Length: 311
Image (tube, rainbow, N blue to C red):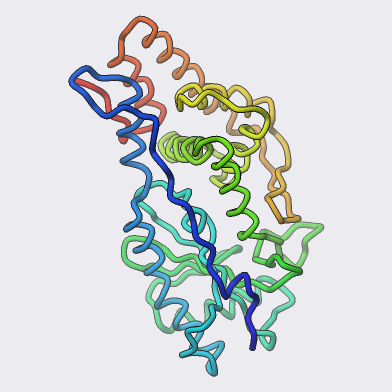
């Protein structure tokens, strides 16, 4: 069976470029604190390679069962590494990898729940601790989880499991990871790598402060934030401006690049954003008074223990 070209050729992902930040010195600077923070939370090339490698035995099991005639064919691919690992927007340590797995035509299920059961039935007999959810099958692999999302080809995009709604009773949602990666790459090139750095900091804030908003929603908001007009390069200023802007932008429905299924973003996260905004504003006042340690302490409260505070 010929596989879609988009799956047969994996697009190259650009690494997050940490530049523009001074190195740590005996005289601490807030810029050097942010630089050290990013070097701690941005996964390395090796970390991304290892995360992808954890998927190999999972996809091999699926291929042997679902594509027995192609089990040893190395000329193409039946899957795509998507999500944060696929776009290199993860935060270290990487804890989950999304894998889109293309179902063969003979097993193309009409309902996403049936497709999930097919993937689960194959994997549960080979791996311990496999669980099934509404949107994917989770397989524990060492220090992380591989999340397998069965997919169907759909006019250049893909149908993947989503939460059933009145307008999407079958549970299928349209996604286009190729377009998402290309759009992010373009945004990064236009704004000197700033969007990915902002996404990284926002995801660290989300994890540390338990902010009730999806990581993917933060990615889409960050790209829209930069598309309006170029923001200052300083990451701390971009964060402050983002929190102020995003509270007025949401609630809203965000449509991913190349997709047709919008993501609803509510206002329940505004309280966390407001608290972060005022802490960052206080940090800005400390900097103006040349109190770097106090400013770094405020940012550490917002971004978590990975943010260094000078002694």
